[in-house]
Structure formats: C-alpha cells, structure tokens
Image (cartoon, rainbow, N blue to C red; front, side, top):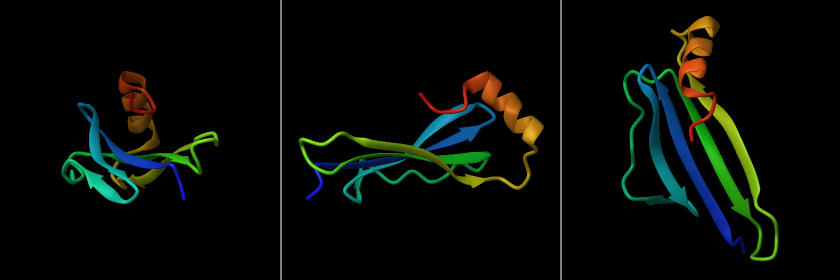
Length: 86
C-alpha cells in the first residue's frame, strides 16, 4: 500500500499562477477548484511514495494548454511568473 499519493493542479493566468484542486489518494483536499476562465495552461504535480521507506516519485506535467495562446505569449508569461508554480 502506498504511503503517499498527493496531486495538485495549478493554472497559469495572465495574472500569475493559481492553485487548483489538491488531492491525496484520490480524495479532494478542501474543495474542488475549477480552471479559471482566463487560464492559458494547467499543470499537474504528483508526489507518490510507494512505502514509508521508499523515496518519493515526483513528477510535473502540462495537462492542458489553451489553443488561443502562442508560444511567444506563453514564454512571456513564463518570464514573468516562472515555468512552474512555487
């Protein structure tokens, strides 16, 4: 049985990164947070630990990108707010 299975979504908007829904073992922590209407990118961070003695397996991936944003516009937002949420 896994010791930890934490996931969170983050959304990049023209105003910066916005924390999305967080979950642990598939159960939402707090409340479900919908993607903001002005989001241009959504990422998922995952921290999975197989057991209390194993090392965490951490991953980060883009799970959605607005078709309305160009690579140049996205790069400008990354320069302002970073490529990953803090």
